[in-house]
Length: 261
Image 1 (cartoon, rainbow, N blue to C red):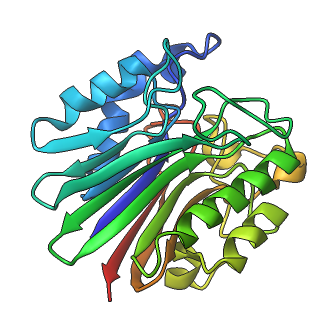
Image 2: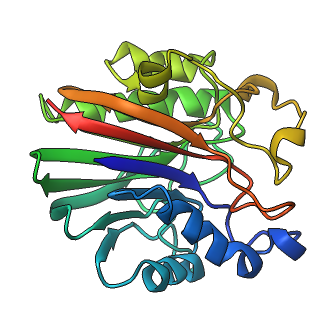
């Protein structure tokens, strides 16, 4: 099965114009994702209009799930799956805070409201659970606490094969990643390529010209596909497609092929 994780850059960013504006890159964004022939698509920063664009662009052969971030926000961490690949058996979400069942809650100095969405899918290979999330970009304490929450949630699932995707706003050297790895999560990209931190994935629409400094977040790969339990990694790649100055997003996407054992 193929899975891709994509921070698509929220359409609500007021300063985005020209090729950065969602209306000018949405078709290319969807086409770039579909070119990877995924069975599962995990999005971050997905707003209402972007969710609608994906529903239209992907077509009736795809199903989806996502918890609305707020009354005026979209399914921030939407998950799409191809109907020929799987059927949904369970779905839900929780907020990455001290009060995970209270919508819109945040803790530990988190600058943004953060949440995790999950799907349990029955596939031709077996049952698996996908969790899609976006950790805070500002508070290191929040990133570490949010990582610990994801570990606690994963531990409650027993031996079920699990996939954790998202923009974690930190690279492999960050303590939040060490917390995730300590609970048995494995990086599919490192397993497939032998490279723990190939290059940055957040590039501010500059591609390989980006030479910024993200401070404690680190300047390496911050978009991840992790697996836990009886899952084998087959391959992985960073999706660096662009047409001159037109990029599908301000992040490179990450794709992986995995198999249930």
